[in-house]
Amino acid sequence: MKVRVCWIKDIVVAVTGENMEAMKGIIQRYQHKRISLVEAGVTRHRSIFNGLKALAEDQPNSRLSKPEVVIIHDAVRPFVEEDVLFQVVTAAKEYGASGAIRPLVSTVISPSTEGCLDYSLERARHRASEMPQAFLFDVIYEAYRQCSDHDLEFGTECLHLALKYCHIKAKLVEGSPDLWKVTYKRDLYAAESIIKERISQQICVVMDTKEDEEHVGHRLEEMLKNELNHMKKVTSGKDLQQILLEQCYSFVCVNVMTSDFEETHKLLNMLEESNLSILYPVVVISVHFLDYKSVPFGQTMENLMPIREFAKEVKKRNILLYGLLIYYPQDEQKLKESLRQGATIIAALIKERNSGLTGQLLIA
Image 1 (spheres, rainbow, N blue to C red):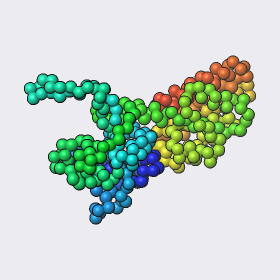
Image 2 (cartoon, one colour):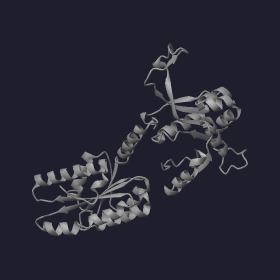
Image 3 (cartoon, rainbow, N blue to C red):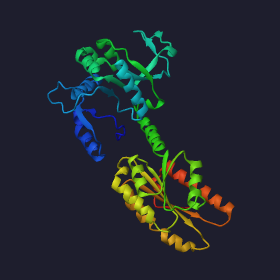
Image 4 (cartoon, one colour):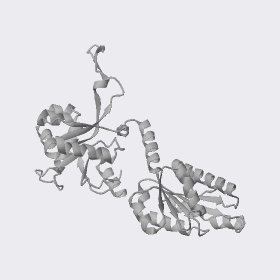
């Protein structure tokens, strides 16, 4: 997952020895920055301790500077939001330690040695401890330095170590439902669905016209606003560069002034140079209008047929290119219907991100 939180200075990942080279390859392939690797321990706490040592100034081989606050997080919880990170860090600065919690969804019981119920906990009074957790670095590092072998072997709760060894009572912060763990194979499918939904929530409309608001391109844009939640309109290359930096993964290129792929070509070139698609697929929908009274249908289709070859080429770089041709009749009611159908098709392509339809020229 790319690091988008600019105020996080360094990231230390604990990796098992047999996976070290594979992880180095992933970092290089996806161009991750600010990441250092340490060898994982045989238990959770030993892995975390190794990570903390990499940040400590008293270690001879430390290449990183000691932070004021350190966040501890699980790789199996990939959907943590920046506001949760900010909340636990802010609380840790004030209280010394902080962690995300969630309501229990099942009652916790304790069985006896005979396998019978011994007692149960009142669910309303207890919470599930989640990640991320944040600490003043000196607090958690000292806790791990004092930690017993038993705790290092069998413990799982970092907040408890801060309480037990440094007498720091952590501030608990209500976490979001997205903090669930990817534990089983079926969870991978749920994770994929969440990623697809998230990268489909923001759409960038690139338009090659500065016409008045009644122009057909702007009217399509208004229809899209009814279909999709978050939209940004871009009319210049400078604005588009900023959108690329913000990592938008869905683009609608509205070709109003030209009947070919000139504007779409510009967009595809910028996307390839940005390497945005190296991690997640980028959807580009090239929209064209057909005024059948002035341009023959056959000529328009001939002009747009190269989309198939374009799509094959950019698909190699994880860019999914689709074509959409919208009839531009003079009748107002028919025009509204064509634009509405076009907006519906665009919304479906962005949400589904179906690679099997790339290169197709859809007609509304």
